[in-house]
Length: 358
Image (cartoon, rainbow, N blue to C red; front, side, top):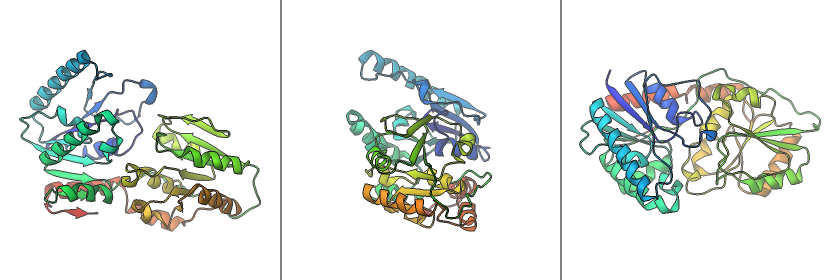
């Protein structure tokens, strides 16, 4: 088996999502060593039960703006560069441009860039220019680029028309499917709505605040790490939950929601959570943007806070019945598994050379 160093920009114990899932799936085809960045704040992580067979923790000191810290981090990077050369890897799979400065200058193998976000827009203001330079350099060196959305494809191809770019969307971890079979019924005393995922600057607190103010019989459970947090009546922050324990935490909720503020970062996202929401067989509400229009058979979309409130009112009348049938659920997910995504990746790496949009 050919050797691959899988370079992650997040801690392995951060939310189990695209980076970890692809690392495990690629291990079926390559001798994979996962190198992940250690989270200095351990309160933001919870140990994932699924672990890579081979791993190497990449550690950087915080407060990199201090001269002495910069010097130490530069030394640490040089050590990792020597380890990469010594490892004699056939492939470097790179999940973020912020890892570009760990790639040895003399590396002779193939570099694969898996672009899953608009990293420049997500960077802090003082780092945006540096991240932009690193991403341009990474794209120039990469022999293959994968992107998770059509928007990211267009971003890269508009500036680099000759690069090999392939859309590999996010997917669904094959497991038991659930379906919330419910018929319209009388009004309940309390309706529970849940959100699963990271809470950061893109989370629309204003819409949720307006909704609980208007509907005294609605509560929210927020499941996942909270980078930012706002105290709102009847909004409960449940913290980080292991991936295989998620359904147990939402099996009694009436609806799952994705309340995002639309910005350049969100507009390029193919949300893993929508695949997972569908697998749970619940009623689903999400802010609308073009990248997720293909989820229209499964998701109730809204565009404003007023539309959100009107939609919740309408769905209360139907007891939050799922928009889709069990057959629609099954047919969609069988074609959107991570196993299928990786099969496409392997075919592209071993045979295809042209641009492909999947």
